Each structure stands twice: as C-alpha cells, then as structure tokens.
Length: 328
Picture 1 (cartoon, rainbow, N blue to C red):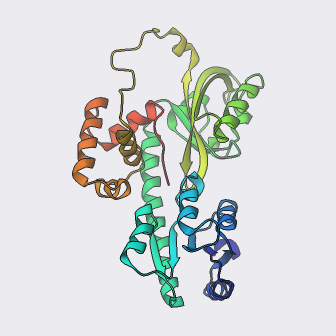
Picture 2 (cartoon, rainbow, N blue to C red):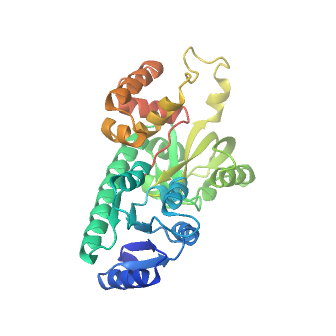
Picture 3 (cartoon, rainbow, N blue to C red):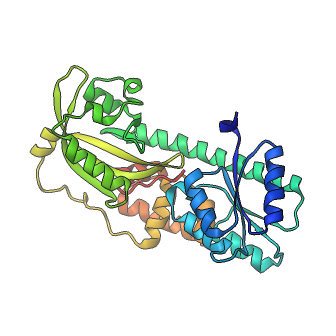
C-alpha cells in the first residue's frame, strides 16, 4: 500500500539527476517526492512530513544549509532525518554540514544502491530513537501525580493517565480517542478552546484556565487546567494537567520555600531540554559542541539547583514546573 511506503523528499536543482533518482527510488519501493529549489523543498517538507530528506547543498536562492536551518526550527520537521547531497568532498565542506546537525552526507556522483543503503540506515536509526523517546515519555507521563492528557491537533485525547481516569470516572481506554470538548461543560468551552488555539498557533507557550468537566456519571467537577505545547511522534501536541479547583483555591497563597523556579543559565536550559528529551551525555555534547565533562558539570548544577538526584527526577521536576519540552 502507498501509505506504508517510506516517503522520500529529494531537493535537487539538477533536473536530470532529480528525475532519475526519483524514478530509481520509486522502483525500489519508496514514495519519492521532489523539489527543484530550497524554498519549494521547505514548503513540501512541512506539507508532506517525509520520512527522510535528501538535499543538495548548492541550490539557487536558499541553499541546502539554509534549508536545514529553517526546517530545524520547526518542531514537526526538526526530527526528520536530513542527508546532504554535495559535489564537494573536502573535509571542511563535509564538516560544515555535519556540524549543523545533519544526519549524513553523500557526495555526487553516487551509486544508487549506496543511496538506498544510507536512506534505510538513517530511517531505521531514527525509528529506534523515536521508540526510545516514546518509552521514556510514557514512563514520565504515567508518573505525573496530577491528572494529565496529551491532545493532538484536533484536540482529541491521545494519552491519558490514571489520575485523570480517576477524576473523571472513565477508563484510560475510554478517554483515548475522545475529543476533550465532549467532556467539557458548554460554559467552559469558549475559554478552553481559545486557550488551546493560542497554544497550538504559538501565540502562547502555555496557558492556565478554570473549567468545568463532565464526569462519566454526568456529575460536574471544577478543575484548573494547565497546558503547554510539546512534540509527540513528530506531531505538534498539547499536554494538559488537571487539578481540583476547590483544592487549589483553599491552598495557602504563599508558596513553600524553594517552590520558585531557580535561575538557570541559557546553557543549563539547553542541557535540561535535551535531558528531558532522553539524550545521553555524549549525545548532548555532540549536539551542543561541548565536552562530555562540561555536560556532566551542567547536570550536576541542575541536580543541585532543583534538589533532584537523577535524570528521571529532573525531568519530572521540569514537567511540574512547565519547562518540559519533549522532542521526538
């Protein structure tokens, strides 16, 4: 079936090479898309979300490096394996692309079988990483103490945890696939819908609104919902946590000592984000172009500032503070 074929986007201005390569990839069982320019390639990557992108460096207008940088800034395309195609073979030119964070490079002219091997290797590698991140996300998500769910772009519940199941009286399976608007009181829909739209569009990074939800037994429950945008399986999503509004209202106004978020440096925030995404010290070092020893130093300071002992508890702290940002 076409839907099961791996989708390849080739960005190449050489018409003969572009058409010949796409024809070969199609014969090999791939679904081949092509773009003749960098700007068109960016547009098609956003529209089609391919499994891998092959991009020539020397493109007219927006070059390959700029294409990579533009797509790397977008959550849904930043996780797509990216391979540079280049006629250049000097060490400096190759390292320039790899230092940006590209997954691989192929020098032209290339053998088609070598191209296929590279494509398969990079897709398999990204699938393994995605599966690992999903496992870590599920472990973190299910350990959130408050009720929580993840909404897709249609505001349908993708995941729900047991505390939310207990609050609403639905099983986790019953909540999965259920539009959240189906269990929100009509008087609360305008505020919640507006908050979700602003978060999805990037107008706000997070939100907090008071809503009334309808439990399975048709009883009403007043909840405070906090939401923020995350990336799950390459798709823009929103994670929401729920707290009993009545309990929130009776809590002391003064925060407990140490409840404020400690001051973190820009580099510490970078390291924290990658730790939450499940990267190891060596992977963080490669991504930030620093030594593993420097990464370990940042980790130690993060543990000290947040009173946590390991990466898992640090990630849970980041979730509670609204700093968690998972990348697939």
